[in-house]
Every structure is written in C-alpha cells, then in structure tokens.
Length: 622
Image 1 (spheres, rainbow, N blue to C red):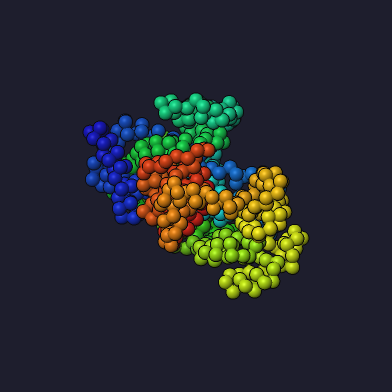
Image 2 (cartoon, rainbow, N blue to C red):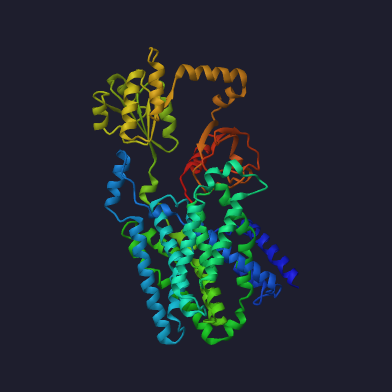
C-alpha cells in the first residue's frame, strides 16, 4: 500500500503541471494546486493515499530542499549600499531617488507594521481563548510566501523594477524574520536541553563554509564533468552539514537548510547550477511535501469541531489584516492602485506556514485541528492574493518609458533608419547643424536644429541625455570627437560612423573601441554584404523581404532562461539561427536551453519580432 501511495503521489505530481497548462491555471501557485490535490487524494477525499514511512521521509527532505531553495531566492544586492553615480544618467537617477524613500526603507517600514499587527492579532486570539500561544501565532501571521511573490513578479516581469524589488524585499523579510523567530521559539519552548547561544554556531559554520568555498566557482569550469556534477555535490554537502549542525545545537533543521541556500547564493553559482537544483527540488521532493501536506489534512474532522470552523475564517482574516498597513506605506512611492496590489500580494503565505506548523506539531504545542485551520486559511490567501494583484496592477509611469535614441547627422543614410525605428517603440530625435537639412527632413521625422556641433552646444541642448546616441555625420572627425565626449558624459551606448582615411585611422578607431564606442564603416559593411550575397544567396532575400528581418538580442530576462528553444512561447514567430555563448557561436537545436547573457541571432516578422526582441532583452532578475 505504501508503494502504491508513492506511485499515486508521483503520478499526481506529473499530472498537475500538465493540467495547469491545459486549463491555463497560471493565476494560482503550483503549491496551492498540489495541496488541493493532496486533499482530494488523502483523508479528506478518496483516501487513495495514506502517509507512510517512505512518504513522510521524502516529505521531510522536501521541506528541507524547499527552504534551501528559498535561501537561494534572496537578492542580496537589495541590501547593498548604492555606488556613487558615475555618469549623468546615474546622477539623475540618484537625484530622483533621493526625493523618495528607497526600497529598503519602504520594505523595512512595511514589515515592522506587519510584526506589530501580527502581535496585536495574536494577543486578541489569546484573550478570547481561541488560540493561546501568542508567540507562535505572531510568527504565523507575519509570514509571507517568498515563492509566490517571486513567481508572480517574474510572470509580470517586475523583478528588475523598483516596485518589484520593494515587494520582493518585503517578502524576503517575511521569510527571514519568522525563520529566525521560529528558531528562538523552538529553542525556548521546545524540549531541547541546549542553551540558546549554541544556535550561533550554525551561523559561524555557515560563515566558515562560505569562506572555504568562496573561490569554488572560479575553477569549477576547468574540472567539472557531466559525470561528477561538482556543483550539485557541493549544494548537498552544504545542506547536510548545516542541517546536521543545526539539529546538534538544538535549532531546527529548516534553519540549517535555509542558511545553506544563502551560502550557495553568496558563492554566486552558475545559472545552470540553479536550474539543476530547481529541477531536482521542484521536480521531485517539493511536490511530495506539498501533496502530503494536503493528504494529512482531515477536513471532515476539522469541520466537525465548531471551534475549528470558527478558526478557519478568523485565521484567514488575521493573515490579511496583518498586511493591511503595507498598502499605506507603498503609497508613499507608488501609485495608489499598485500600493493596494502590492499589499494584496504580500498577503499570500503558505511555504513557511507549513514549515512552522511541522515544527509546532513536533513540539506538540498545537492540535491537529488548529494546524489544519492555519493551513486551510493559508491556502485561501494563496488563491486570492495573486488574483487580486494581477487584477489591480498597472504599469508605473517610470516603466512605460520608450528607449530613447538621438541621431547626430541628418542625411539620406540616417533618415530611413530613424523613420523605421519610430514605428518600433523607440523615442527618436534627430539633430543637425545644417539649416538646409533641417528644412529638407523635418517634415519626415522629428529633427532639431543646433547652432553648432561643439561639445558645449550638444551638452547644453541635452543631446547626450539618451539611451543610445547614433553619430551618422559624414565628417568622421566630428563623430570621433563627439563619440568620446558622449562616453565620458555617460551615454550607455554610442554608435559612430567612422570612415577617416588618414594615417591615424587605425589609432583613432582603436581609441573609440577602447572607450566602448560601437564603430561602423559603410564601405566595409558594403563589402561584407556583397560577400554574403555571393556566399549565401538567401541573404539577399532576407534583406529585401519587407515582412522579415534579422535581429540580435542579449538575453537578460530570466523568465526565459533554462527554457528549451522549442518551448519558448513565441518560437513559432521566429527562427533562431545562432547563439553566441561564452565567446563562441553554437548551432542551436530545439532542445538547446536558453542561458542568461546568450546572444541570439534570429529572423522574424518585422511586426512581431521587435516585441519578442524587447521581451528577451528586458532585465528581469532572479
């Protein structure tokens, strides 16, 4: 029977993502669906699955791996002191940021209110006699599901934006602080005979392991083989070591697992290491933990107790009320609708609730009815919170800004390019110092007339205030001088035409390249194009095709990393011909996995491909 239960659980874990994809249940976290599935299969439903020694063991390992991966979710860059601005754009951003509170300030204030309200609610439950353990209730009400928050923000591609970073940091605090509080709670009120100060040994051990393996990934590439998987061996060594130390000093195993995740994250593993760990955790052990959490719930028994029937809605309300003040604090920086959306998303809690209740059950400080009420209320929050967020959230004004491109040099070579870019969501402005060119082309695109092309005049007219500067003037030395000035000013991308034929050409071009300027030469481009037409005749068809074009994009959006080419949602609209990775070109197949910072060269429809290129290149961290 035990083996049959394991087979059913694994089969359910296989079917759940397929059913979610088939019926487009993307609004609900997978964990919630898995718990509901467990309820249907277990004591509350068809009783097809019963707890056994093997399933309980796998479930216990699952929660350890879950907390380990949660530790790896923390973005420590959020806590770092901002570097001094290096250029005009960073100075402008710093000036604007100084007028508003930072993500750290808003998140800290938000979580302090969560702790205060959680304690107040726990105190109310105690004086009413509904739940008397005030410290355990405070920990439970103050938890936030980091996994649900990250998944929702990643889906909306908000992780790289100030709004997403703020919500992420609140959720990080909502996992770290209750985790630390649970450790102290278990040590003080549990059966452990170890003094509380011994818990510090777990942190000391984590620090020693970090220092010992700090350089691990710097030489990892030279010694790694597919049959050794050294990075995965290191991950499990960290988990087992810190879990063992945690249990030895009277702390909880989940604290050791969480710290192991933090240590590995600080070691800066490669992207594929994280993908392999996710595959192992979320592919096997974690679904078993969530499904078994539902299997062991006996809802008919819970509902037969009048007090438990009252507790379920009251716990649900408490989870929500504890986070109500978050919206008021988010309003200080973000628009009202998004403040309420952020407050709603942080109401979601499930992961740490299950872990806390597992510890509480082992300590025998909570009844099965109370534990079930907490779990059911948490499941409801995870159903409602993402739905509310997706319904309420709209893009912040700062997120709607188009990419700005300024052209210096308004002529027959640059005008057609500017006109086409205007149609592809770019904010284009062209500049010229020739009145004849201004009158000739101003009716065709946005052109501004400058008195001169001296650096002072260009800076005064804010020509360098752009994301991309294109220097397409026919005078190569003007382009040379302005390109160097633009890079010194801090323009992120400078593209300069340089065709000077004097003896200093190579030296000047090398100087531009060293400064970070992207140099192009029309005659050389024409030569390369003619050669391509001879060697690859289809090049002419691609270039002449009015519906298709060639594109290149540097993959920055982690939403697509670890995804095989055949599974990209827009793959039917483009054809990826090459991938430039780690200094070399590779020929992709349908099974090739996209990695962070890959350069994809692809062809696609001119109407669809630019949006796809923008989606792949959009910064979306974690």
